[in-house]
Image (cartoon, rainbow, N blue to C red; front, side, top):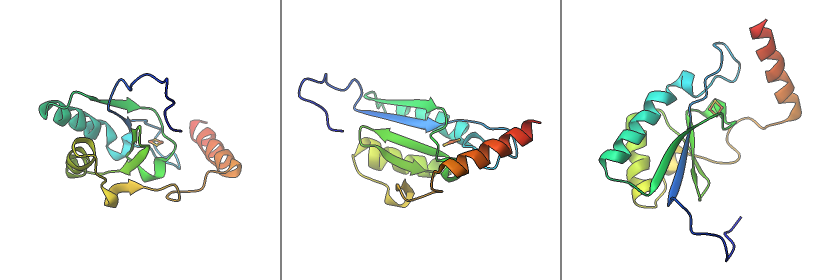
Length: 134
Ligand code: FES
């Protein structure tokens, strides 16, 4: 949705949400934290600070519901998603997207990426998670 004329100016130029959700070991969807998202998110924050980037907020987030593609992040207001694995991936996102308003195509997640979300798949995942807790 586009901003309306009377909306206040955005507080941050960009808002980056990095999933750091952790699920129990063996969960069928896995989790971003199990794939290393916590130290990677810490690195991203540290590098942004070192680079003097002050108009961008980088937050840890809960599950963004694209777990199988994780670690994941989404950057607003554009709503661009990335899947990343290394510090080098994050350096590229910082330089290309966050500092220069470009896009890192090789890491971008598109709406069609990942498993389709259906009521049936949600029930399957919940049943599997319940079985793991038992
Ligand atoms: S655990 Fe990160 S998107 Fe779900």
